[in-house]
Image (tube, rainbow, N blue to C red; front, side, top):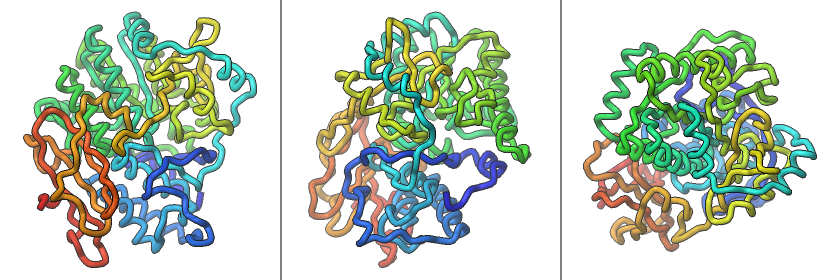
Length: 462
């Protein structure tokens, strides 16, 4: 890692991605924008830490305002490189990857990462011999025995957000009515948070200011469709700015803040309600994990301790095809063949099996089938109840690269696109995956050198 934000700063700016730890190389997602380049052609450029940090922060700001191309290709321009492979800072590359995934639906390989942790040989052996059962029925069966279900995600892989919607749909008939999401915009005061969440529920869709990771159209539609199902949104992320200097103590403060906010804003605000909590990977742990020094009680453990409710905890991040916290073994390659056409829960000798970072800390572990491209798009987007549609001919670029966006027609200008695709001149355009509602279109172009688009996204389509 070439630079590192102070823990207090990283935790205070909670609307931005939390700086990731390092991880191992696995197979990259294939796309013309992210395919690895020859090191001889594109040499790594070693940049000053302050320059990298400024570019990182600017990319976060751009993405938060819907400027997807500025946040990715514009960041490369500011850093004076042609490709992301020329940057060796894993956090900067992760920021690029997070925004790229919002335009492609695919996680992006990060060559700047190394191994996070070593998986015990016995876990790998257990994974090889594990069985699998369909995930949703198993989750439903177990969710009947509790009133809190916690599902985690890999912030760099939109696939998990489509599964989050599947879980929300499946839990609704069981009486689950509250969706608490770590990604929703934080507020210091409960009253302000209740007001913001009431506005979100009334609107029926998130906006650019609703939360950083919601810049992903898949995440935004997970929220949009959950609201339509009748879920009441809850924001619970920490708002603390006075974190301890010790990193482990600071992490513990954040976990406690999250648990306290959930108790006040979900359990006490909606007495007797059943709650689905959607979190980043580590917070789901019911026992301390190695990534936090093996000493920090995470949010789920603290919530369980205070409420006396044993939540159903479900990990889908550890077996992502490109996990944020990568093991020294390719666990997904071993597990993926067990996911035959649908998401599966791992079992061994009739009991749930969890391997990797969260082994022994969560109840269930899900593996999703390998992504298949259909019309240039991930096949799992059909989970979102979409239909394929070609990019309108008049929106295809005459030269260069263009981001073509589709918005639900009745939503305001600061809404999140319901879908978007990167289109390069002279190549077949990916299909759009659209809902049944009418849509309006907008485009963003790469054209900073020529002043095209004036750096302003969402220009009206020609």
